Image (cartoon, rainbow, N blue to C red; front, side, top):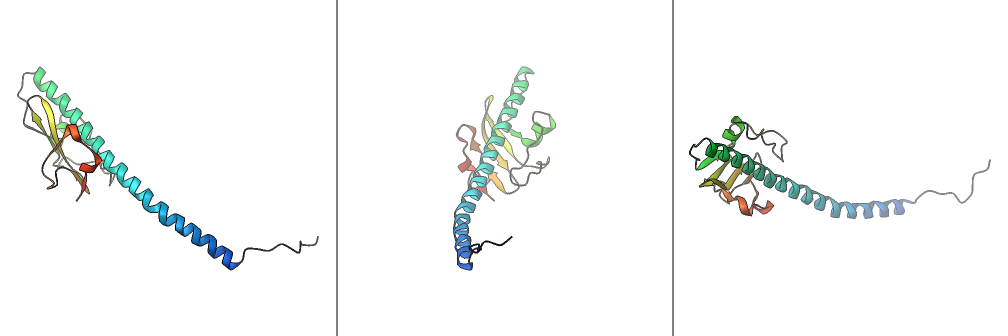
Length: 146
């Protein structure tokens, strides 16, 4: 069996050219991919805020049925202790928030009006990290890094 005389491998220049093209593609794709992941994590914070709002709404309805006063502020801890929500997993760390988490919702009359959430690496509060954000205007742009 004779080997074909025209068989040859890639030259060093060809290999370097392929590596350069792949490097350029990676330099474009990786930042875009990371930005997409960051956007999805921020959107998860908004979804968690809406879940917290819904849990608080059920809590308020129970208070009304039992003819109890609706508090001006409802804490994450209260909703977990009263079993209105199982808990929230932090989108950045994947850890469940503990009972010492300081997230809260504010009420106006018998409705939830604002939310302030404190994650491990981000907040969904005002620019100062303490002012609650309206639940009617929640967007991933409201999530700020600590």
